[in-house]
Length: 260
Image (cartoon, rainbow, N blue to C red):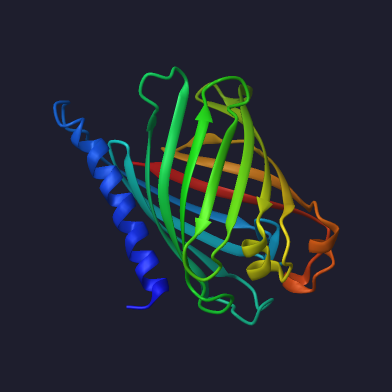
């Protein structure tokens, strides 16, 4: 087993061990039901951490399962046009495992730990990230999440986020109120991360993302139209020739989701 595979194996083992220990502490509680979540999103572009992976329409389905605080999911990206010569093909599919809960003894503070296996058939080599994050249940719901690649990129990406939901800004009918969800996030990459994804051997504040969604319920499903704005924060990142790099992206989307 080479060092890369060993790192992947150890990282997953640590994650599963921590999750098992935390869940073991809850065995005295009533058994939590298993939940199933499904979603399907359509976007005019696919921009990930400031990287314009597809400048045209994409379809992104996902299915997940939850048991108490533990969850796992499968997510994919399908190109809907020939923009990248992959029309009708899945260019990415990811597997993720997450454990999220309140920090014991600390009011309003939550944490998440997890792993994401990224599979890029036509963009990058497959790679694995492990992550840990903290979030506060206060105004604007601030959060910070540290992603550590332990495979191909061997770098660190940190995301800082805030968000707020305004409930019932308008009613399509008495049974169909529309909420407004606003979000903002800033991403920072270290030299290892930026060298792999951008070809820049330096730490940078990489990207800023602003989003607005207007979710409402229809026939048991949640429908979420959205508009998104992404800008690159570093001049050196903007000047690379990867991903048809520009300084700003604006794109719209709509998603449907349901929990069972």
